[in-house]
Image 1 (cartoon, rainbow, N blue to C red):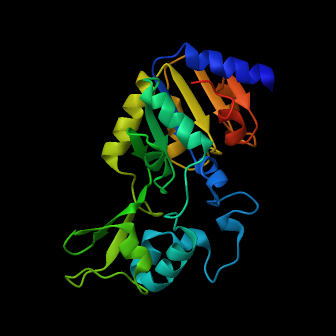
Image 2 (image 1 turned 120 degrees about the vertical axis):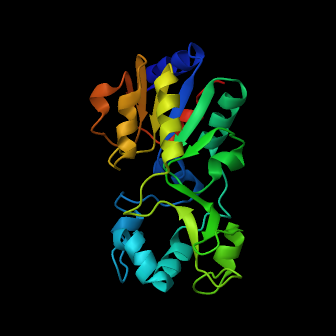
Length: 240
């Protein structure tokens, strides 16, 4: 492991355009549960399957049940960034990291100080009325009773991508551009099973892909370096 960390540090040192592509594993050490692990949200018992609750159709047809689940399980307002978030922010400040492409919706990268964050699945921090498109912050949503309603009477929807909804086209295109331009791609805390986000790794044109995940992924054969460990253990050893 020590040798792998040394290789990682050398690759970072010799790179000028690093893109970090991360998933739920980035935030688990901040106390935010992931979705697919044995203790994840998808393996817990609810009145409806979580995948169904987090779908566009369910939101539109059963918003009260959606918001009960959403407020209970996806409220990360009191969560704090961890070592991985902070190290990435430091690397960005030093001009090493050009973009963070994240599947997370918790806003912790920005809270840690990162500026160029591409949120593929949106963010709990942004919410809009479906009728008049007025913006509401997350505090309004999580402190509301049952379904948050706009002053115009319309229902408010979190700006997060639900099942059955497309990814934001502008974010998707920018993520592809940044990955194509990168000379080092670090993929961390993701099983690379979520489509279409997992396809982004195929746009990388550089020589070195680093995969940091607790378990194997279907893309391990594409990696220059594979580290099967918690992100916090790895990033605590990264030298900026």
